[in-house]
Amino acid sequence: MALGPMDDAVEGFLSYARVERRLAQNTLTAYASDLSELRLYLTKQGLERPSEVQREHLAHYMGHLLDSGRSMRTVSRHRSSFRQLFRFLVREGLLEVDPSLLIQAPKFSQPLPSVLSQEQVSALLNAPDAGTVIGQRDRTLLQVLYSTGLRVTEMVSLQRKNLHLDRGLLQVTGKGDKERLVPTGPIAARALADWIQGPRWQLDPHNALPWVFPSPRGGHIGRKAFWVRIKRHALNAGLPQDRVSPHKLRHSFATHLLEHGADLRAVQAMLGHADISTTQIYTHVARERLRRVHEQSHPRGR
Image (cartoon, rainbow, N blue to C red; front, side, top):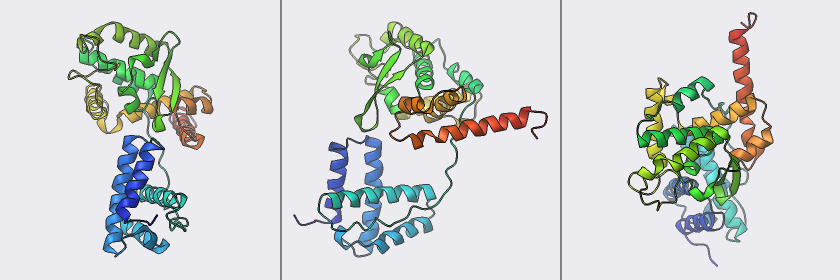
């Protein structure tokens, strides 16, 4: 089979990533965006087929991204995207040599994720108005998000059949359609039970929707809508809005667990990380927070 234009190569890769690797839609969208930008750049260089692309073309492309003001992290993501593409083409026998093989990632120091203190988390969890059904829904969402460390997409798409509250567990489908069981803890389990048995019916009067957290329009609350709502609750709680997001609660969940002696492997399993090196960043966060506490509180810490 002769290799077609770059468009065909990218489409073949995206189809493989969607169907065989079953990657999340957000990941597929990022790949499509990055590779579209690469294709436009190569076309301007007169390169129409992947077989025409050499290592120096990709190195110059990374330099082009840096010169255009892209961050090291963004350039590193673009490198990852085109490496996945060319690896796929070689594996499928459509290329003999991978031109991305020796392209080095840009060097940058990874900043530690910032987290909320336990007092800030408490203020945020109490911010939604418990006198309204939407406020009760949001309060339950925030409680479960902090107690389980779920990704926001996993949280909003949670279905009632995934709840095993008698065992204190949630069945979650994460990245790559991988399933995992996540403990809720007694407080979140009670919050979920109270929500399901109580005010939820006001958003689903006929009990027809499978979602734990329906929206007033049917379906489930969207991740973007929840992102907007959590910013509003942060404002009501007197917290800086730029420091609060659904993912910040995930960071806080992991860090607070480790600060209280949780095993790193257990945290990895709960977060759904494929590689423990991804989880290890939270050990650095916990240590840094302890160092700051000592510095601020000990009489000889300064």
